[in-house]
Image 1 (cartoon, rainbow, N blue to C red):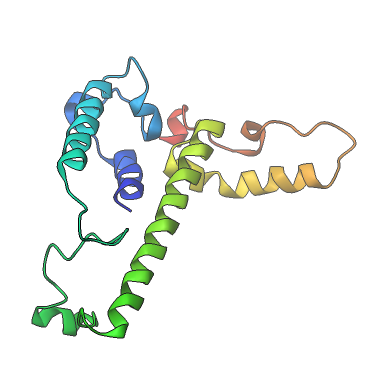
Image 2: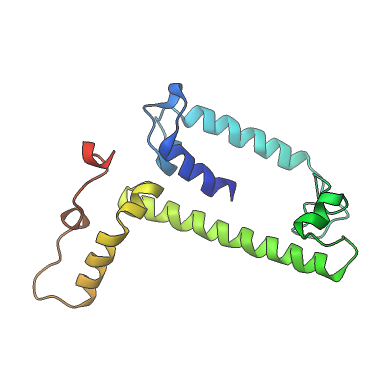
Length: 161
Protein backbone atom coordinates (compact mmCIF):
# COMPACT_ATOMS: atom_id res chain seq x y z
CA UNK A 1 0.00 0.00 0.00
CA UNK A 2 2.86 2.33 0.79
CA UNK A 3 4.40 1.65 -2.63
CA UNK A 4 1.17 2.68 -4.37
CA UNK A 5 0.99 5.84 -2.25
CA UNK A 6 4.63 6.53 -3.16
CA UNK A 7 3.85 6.29 -6.88
CA UNK A 8 1.03 8.81 -6.48
CA UNK A 9 2.90 11.25 -4.22
CA UNK A 10 6.03 11.41 -6.38
CA UNK A 11 3.92 12.60 -9.31
CA UNK A 12 3.11 15.75 -7.30
CA UNK A 13 6.07 16.26 -4.94
CA UNK A 14 9.82 15.82 -5.29
CA UNK A 15 12.71 16.90 -3.11
CA UNK A 16 14.75 19.67 -4.68
CA UNK A 17 17.71 17.30 -5.24
CA UNK A 18 15.51 15.03 -7.38
CA UNK A 19 13.61 17.59 -9.49
CA UNK A 20 15.22 16.23 -12.65
CA UNK A 21 14.27 12.62 -11.90
CA UNK A 22 11.28 11.13 -13.71
CA UNK A 23 8.14 10.13 -11.85
CA UNK A 24 7.14 6.52 -11.36
CA UNK A 25 9.29 3.44 -11.64
CA UNK A 26 11.55 5.17 -14.15
CA UNK A 27 13.12 6.98 -11.17
CA UNK A 28 14.86 3.70 -10.30
CA UNK A 29 16.48 3.41 -13.73
CA UNK A 30 20.24 3.46 -14.11
CA UNK A 31 21.78 6.87 -14.61
CA UNK A 32 18.94 8.74 -12.91
CA UNK A 33 19.64 11.26 -10.14
CA UNK A 34 17.49 9.28 -7.70
CA UNK A 35 19.06 5.85 -8.36
CA UNK A 36 21.74 5.98 -5.62
CA UNK A 37 19.21 7.11 -2.98
CA UNK A 38 16.79 4.33 -3.93
CA UNK A 39 19.64 1.81 -3.86
CA UNK A 40 20.54 2.84 -0.31
CA UNK A 41 16.89 2.56 0.77
CA UNK A 42 16.65 -0.95 -0.73
CA UNK A 43 19.88 -1.98 1.04
CA UNK A 44 18.64 -0.68 4.41
CA UNK A 45 15.31 -2.45 4.04
CA UNK A 46 17.11 -5.65 3.05
CA UNK A 47 19.35 -5.47 6.13
CA UNK A 48 16.34 -4.92 8.38
CA UNK A 49 14.47 -7.83 6.76
CA UNK A 50 17.51 -10.09 7.05
CA UNK A 51 17.93 -9.35 10.76
CA UNK A 52 14.24 -9.64 11.67
CA UNK A 53 13.18 -13.00 13.05
CA UNK A 54 9.87 -14.65 12.11
CA UNK A 55 10.17 -17.43 14.69
CA UNK A 56 6.92 -18.22 16.50
CA UNK A 57 4.76 -16.32 14.01
CA UNK A 58 2.45 -17.51 11.28
CA UNK A 59 3.13 -16.39 7.71
CA UNK A 60 1.70 -12.93 7.21
CA UNK A 61 1.53 -12.20 10.95
CA UNK A 62 3.41 -8.96 11.41
CA UNK A 63 2.02 -8.45 14.88
CA UNK A 64 0.46 -5.27 16.22
CA UNK A 65 3.35 -2.78 16.56
CA UNK A 66 1.08 0.02 17.81
CA UNK A 67 -0.84 -2.30 20.18
CA UNK A 68 -4.15 -1.13 18.77
CA UNK A 69 -6.02 -4.40 19.35
CA UNK A 70 -5.37 -4.45 23.11
CA UNK A 71 -5.81 -0.73 23.70
CA UNK A 72 -9.11 1.01 24.18
CA UNK A 73 -8.65 2.55 20.76
CA UNK A 74 -9.00 -0.88 19.15
CA UNK A 75 -12.60 -1.28 20.27
CA UNK A 76 -13.45 2.23 19.11
CA UNK A 77 -12.04 1.45 15.67
CA UNK A 78 -13.89 -1.87 15.53
CA UNK A 79 -10.78 -4.05 15.87
CA UNK A 80 -11.75 -7.22 17.75
CA UNK A 81 -9.68 -8.63 20.63
CA UNK A 82 -6.77 -10.89 19.67
CA UNK A 83 -8.31 -14.00 21.25
CA UNK A 84 -11.67 -13.71 19.44
CA UNK A 85 -12.79 -15.28 16.17
CA UNK A 86 -13.24 -11.83 14.68
CA UNK A 87 -9.52 -11.08 14.94
CA UNK A 88 -8.59 -13.82 12.45
CA UNK A 89 -11.28 -12.49 10.09
CA UNK A 90 -9.85 -8.99 10.54
CA UNK A 91 -6.36 -10.27 9.75
CA UNK A 92 -7.67 -12.02 6.62
CA UNK A 93 -9.22 -8.73 5.50
CA UNK A 94 -5.86 -7.04 5.95
CA UNK A 95 -4.01 -9.73 4.00
CA UNK A 96 -6.52 -9.60 1.15
CA UNK A 97 -6.32 -5.82 0.94
CA UNK A 98 -2.53 -6.03 0.96
CA UNK A 99 -2.63 -8.49 -1.92
CA UNK A 100 -4.96 -6.18 -3.83
CA UNK A 101 -2.55 -3.28 -3.23
CA UNK A 102 0.34 -5.40 -4.56
CA UNK A 103 -1.64 -6.19 -7.71
CA UNK A 104 -2.47 -2.48 -8.08
CA UNK A 105 1.19 -1.55 -7.77
CA UNK A 106 2.24 -4.22 -10.26
CA UNK A 107 -0.45 -3.11 -12.71
CA UNK A 108 0.61 0.52 -12.40
CA UNK A 109 4.27 -0.31 -12.95
CA UNK A 110 3.55 -2.57 -15.93
CA UNK A 111 1.27 0.06 -17.48
CA UNK A 112 4.00 2.65 -16.96
CA UNK A 113 6.54 0.40 -18.67
CA UNK A 114 4.14 -0.17 -21.58
CA UNK A 115 2.96 3.43 -22.06
CA UNK A 116 5.59 5.63 -20.43
CA UNK A 117 2.88 7.40 -18.39
CA UNK A 118 3.23 7.76 -14.64
CA UNK A 119 0.31 6.81 -12.37
CA UNK A 120 -1.47 10.16 -12.63
CA UNK A 121 -1.02 10.39 -16.40
CA UNK A 122 -2.41 6.85 -16.71
CA UNK A 123 -5.67 8.02 -15.12
CA UNK A 124 -5.70 11.11 -17.35
CA UNK A 125 -5.30 8.86 -20.40
CA UNK A 126 -7.91 6.30 -19.31
CA UNK A 127 -10.68 7.68 -21.52
CA UNK A 128 -8.57 7.96 -24.70
CA UNK A 129 -7.04 4.54 -24.00
CA UNK A 130 -10.54 3.08 -23.70
CA UNK A 131 -11.52 4.71 -26.99
CA UNK A 132 -8.43 3.30 -28.73
CA UNK A 133 -9.01 -0.16 -27.25
CA UNK A 134 -12.62 -0.24 -28.43
CA UNK A 135 -11.47 0.99 -31.86
CA UNK A 136 -9.05 -1.96 -32.00
CA UNK A 137 -11.69 -4.44 -30.85
CA UNK A 138 -14.15 -3.31 -33.53
CA UNK A 139 -11.84 -4.75 -36.23
CA UNK A 140 -11.42 -1.60 -38.29
CA UNK A 141 -10.59 -1.69 -42.00
CA UNK A 142 -7.68 0.70 -41.54
CA UNK A 143 -4.91 0.63 -38.92
CA UNK A 144 -5.74 2.21 -35.59
CA UNK A 145 -3.53 5.21 -34.83
CA UNK A 146 -1.27 5.21 -31.75
CA UNK A 147 -2.54 6.33 -28.37
CA UNK A 148 -1.01 9.79 -28.77
CA UNK A 149 -3.50 10.49 -31.57
CA UNK A 150 -6.40 9.83 -29.17
CA UNK A 151 -4.97 12.06 -26.42
CA UNK A 152 -5.37 15.83 -26.64
CA UNK A 153 -2.34 16.23 -24.39
CA UNK A 154 0.84 14.28 -24.01
CA UNK A 155 2.84 13.99 -20.71
CA UNK A 156 6.01 15.40 -22.25
CA UNK A 157 4.22 18.49 -23.54
CA UNK A 158 3.58 21.58 -21.40
CA UNK A 159 -0.16 20.85 -21.55
CA UNK A 160 0.28 17.51 -19.74
CA UNK A 161 2.31 18.99 -16.90
